[in-house]
View 1: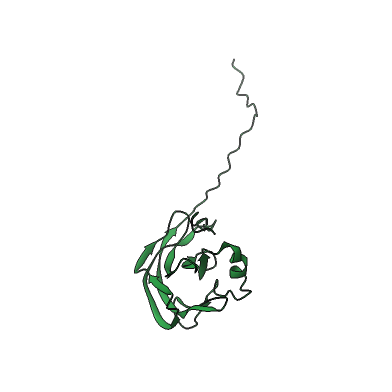
View 2 (view 1 turned 120 degrees about the vertical axis):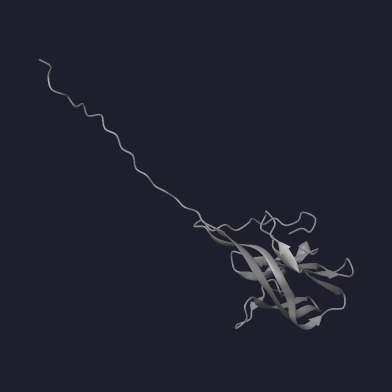
Length: 164
């Protein structure tokens, strides 16, 4: 995904209706194990979902333009926190597939917590961030109701009594 083009996702919709994420709030870094000094972490206090379905929890912004930026976003379809890398399109596939020194696109849900996720981000020869994030989701309830009706007609001619 190009940083210049912006988010290209689509808001996930369950065909049967459901409870869709609308906003994240109460975002906390409950445990920071490591943050590279070349990065500034930005965690939002609250954030609304965009019409395209982007629900950001925060960003890791580099202090120099030679390093990639990372967006931490809620993936509604998979019900998990994902990390997207911007500024290094050449290695996007390596990032998404965790190879050649790139790690961190998928986070690990911590058992026993609500929405606690272990985030570990690495690029070749650089440890970027490691910690645990916690946040709450506000959801909208959407109900889709389908009503089926069946209407029939016939072309039967009914004759009445003959007049006298």
